[in-house]
Length: 121
Image (cartoon, rainbow, N blue to C red; front, side, top):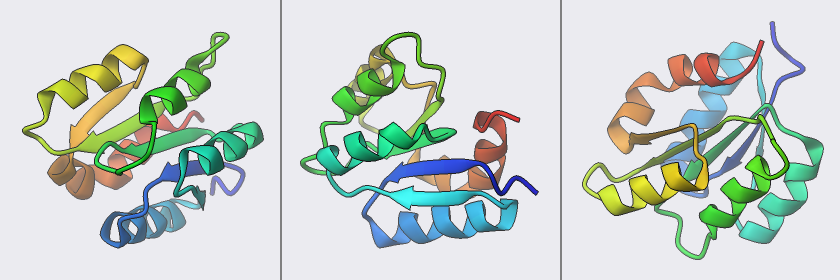
């Protein structure tokens, strides 16, 4: 399949981490995880095909991660997810350049479809 496709997941919640890993594995994608903003910045140097951000991660400067991805005309898609009631965070993520922001429920339910949609062929 798409073994050469890499995902950077800035997700430390075990529930979502397992979901990302399982869905990516089924589709033939490799996942690298980052648990801090600094670790994410380092791993962005490998030019992932998709960046996934958990907007509920405390201590993560996800605005800066999105800006790092999109600076200089970057085309790597950013898929973010978070609480469906936190519209201010959703709007901030979209303004920073996230390609999509979905609720936790949609992320869990539609993850394989989302991965296929946002990972470039």
